[in-house]
Image (cartoon, rainbow, N blue to C red):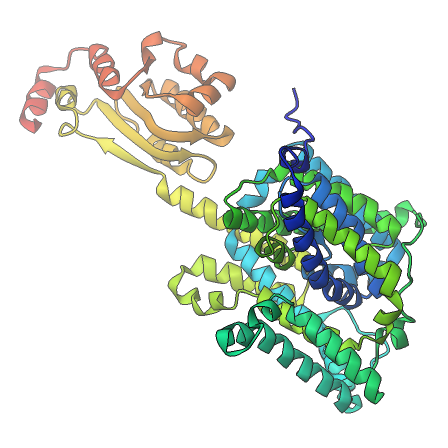
Length: 572
């Protein structure tokens, strides 16, 4: 039987006992989140090399599907800053058509990950890898916005780090002071509104209500009004993209070819893994805030459906978004209905107010993304690196460097590889062997050195087989007792090392008695045939504990010569 997860959206359970009071809270929260999502969705799309409506379509379609089908009560889905670097690279190298294919294929992978209960495996990615590539993505997002922040005239931005730096430096003379002014004022408004307004408290009338309005919306409205009223020479969504269509796009199929699809394997896997990591981390943050527990497998299946459907309607990759989810929770949301309301509210905005979006200055959107990038990064972790061990520091800094300079895929691959090597080394160093003496078991004194007893600790896997090999190189004259009571895990390589020990003992005429086989070690001993080999000569060669094993070893000893007995007595 395959371990297939049931498809049961959290919405089904959330609607039990649902009433008008719950709907009122969810409706208000959904509208608030829609206000936050509006500028972010457009900014993420533009930064990814797409038209602004791609972000809005994603927030509407994927946001609705993720809330309706997801495994979290309050998570909000949509376009995310983490995808900017990946999407921009795919669009630049392979075109928008192949982005649609890669996004849809990543949706299939996400659904299969959830269906086969792989949601918990994402938690095994080390925190050093997550922090490294998150901070790296934040740097790349900020770097990608320098062009619009300064108002530089660059026909096409490169996708690589050094190319971006070269293009910015080469076109620095085209700086637009009006665009820079709009960006700086917008950034100041966002920071001031989010951080300083709540501190004013009772000093300012209606400060509490004003604080609930996102600073990005305030900056967006003010920047749009100033640029429109004073006719400032600043690039806008209308001047660059021709505005936003006041309707959802029709279903479209891209031109598919196996020749191009084979190049999309790694981008597809990267989109799927990044979407899984972002959504499940976001869901865990939400669980901590509302005291709930999400279903990771259902969440991945919902993400898969959303990412499979959305690109065929002009969208981009989607995942769970922390900023919008936190806003949703703080606004009083308690069920997935709030996320569905947020998507429908954005749909109404497109249908009614799309022409107004053409006047939004790109410099303001760049300022919003600069603020998002700063909040996205875990910058304090760099200052705390000195308190961690060298492997953690090397992994985090290497992943950060590779993300910024080379590629996110390479960075994550290296980070996971480095973490695996570090883990193997640490586990192998914790595994150890200990020779038992007469002080531990007085009965050994009567053996006259003809019996050795060893106890193994930890995991006997491919990184710790040297423990068995060292015992194999120094076998006793007559009987070897091996206590595995404190061995918690044995892999196939460890089982093979024990089989080699059995073979060597037989060749040298040494009796091998094993004790303490339990749980997983006992199971693999049965499945590999090791247990049969151990009991081939006598069933007494497998004992429940080391005391019985030593008694069995002593019982099988031949009588020692008189000189040996005297030596054994003197040694005792």
